[in-house]
Image 1 (cartoon, rainbow, N blue to C red):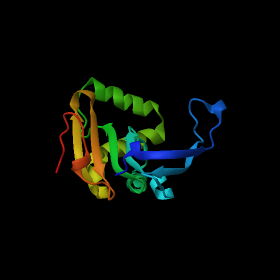
Image 2 (cartoon, helix red, strand yellow):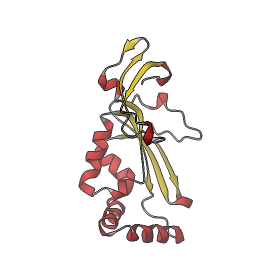
Image 3 (cartoon, rainbow, N blue to C red):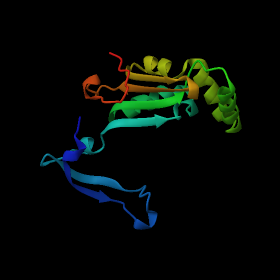
Length: 166
C-alpha cells in the first residue's frame, strides 16, 4: 500500500481556476514516490474506493462488474447501502417511498437490490473477502469493507470500534 505522505513533485494538468472549488477535469500527470518516478498504474491507484448508497441504484447485472472494475484500481472497497433484510419500521417505509419517488428504473433497481440480499450477498457473489462489517439497525444501513486482490488483508486497517472479520 502506498504511503501518500511520501509522494512528492506532483504535476497536475486540466486545472481551470474558473471551476473552483471542484476542479473536476484535473488529473495527475506525474509524481515521485520515495524519490522514484511513479508509473501510471501507481498514479491511478487508490488505497480505498468508497461507494455510498450507489449499489442499490445500479442494475443487477452491472453490480458485480462495477465492483470488479473498482477492484482494479484500489486495495479496499468501502460500501454503504441499505441493510437487508430491511428493519421493520417507519424508517424503512420512508426509504421505500424515497426510492419510489426517484423514478421507475431507480425503484426497480432498489427492489432487485433488496430481493437479491443486499451488500453481503453481492460481496460473496462477486468473490470478495469481507474484512469489516457494520450493521446499523437504527438507521437501516449496512457498511462493508472488501479486500481486493491488491488489498493486504486486515493488518493495515485501523478503524475505531472496528469489527474486523478474519
